[in-house]
Image 1 (cartoon, rainbow, N blue to C red):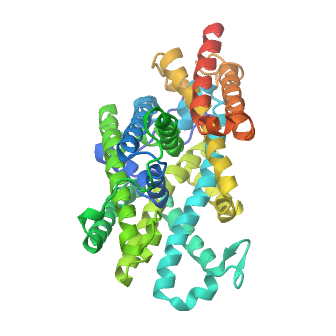
Image 2: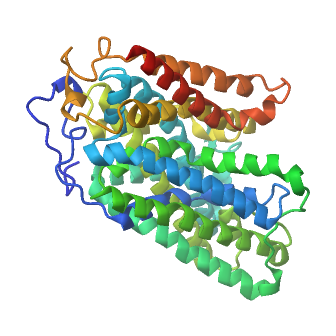
Length: 481
């Protein structure tokens, strides 16, 4: 991973804690557009489309949905800036900046947790992209239909065609990743805008078929008004924050490349509130127009594209969404575990080796079986929030409350007992206790689904875990001082 982002490992840095990929960057080259493109790749996927569309199906009026969306994405924007600052200032990725809070060895705890979560989602997103590719292949070659039937030709729960598409995209993603961060930057610079082109073309096609008057910003009946709408709006806000919780936590992996914190903030502003609002409006317009054009509400963009009576349009649309999903997968679920696993043993596991560990793990979990089980998806999302929330709260409390935004970069790579981040044998007990306490409490409503109000409370697992992690760590650190 050399390219324009160059790393320099200083002689004083302990080999157990550093390699060329984890060392502070000598040159930070990303501008606002690169950060903007990162968020476009993160949002403009099948998952982002379905998430945005689902907000308009909660029984709220369109203005209530837009308010919820703006508040939710505003929270994400604020928190991303908080996570971005220390990594951009020090030029180090998320697992390394975690050493300032968890200890130089204790940082492996948040790194492994985040890495394992990313592996699961890497597999799921690869499967979603492969499903879009299946649509293209079946449209071009109808004779492949028997091979798309898992009961005729399939094993481990996936059809033979599904295996082919999954393997093809798996190799494509690995190839893009292997070429280094500069190629990834160029790839995500292309992905986000490409989806906008297809989205505008799709919207134009549907408007031409149905007319402007068919646009409806409420995808379902408005069932809530006044104070009755407040809990539903809060749930919508929580959904938006939960959707971005993964990339938000390890955003330092990308902000480290920013040439200035001001450039990162500007990119976040364009990529989050501005971009997500525009994308959500396009989603609801296209979804609402599927009713008069196709006779039913379709919230999956691939399914919408597949109904168009043009082979070229189907291939263009499905391929674009496949590529976009590959883009989000690389930035959100490939780069993160690459740094995280490399952090565990820098001399044995390079950035590329860490990424390949994640890629192999994503196949072994057979993600199509996970994604096809709604109950598993439900637990996965809320469990993810319960574990990611405390990690976020501890990191923010450590940097802004305890350390007052001061980072000793050389101490991040020091195994000396006199080092600032040695704590107790390389581990900070306060951070570990706060993380465990926050996760355990946040998991209660997730597991105790039959308890009074627990089902509603579970959707706020990220907020519960984050608040507890922040408060417990701040309190314990004050006592320790």
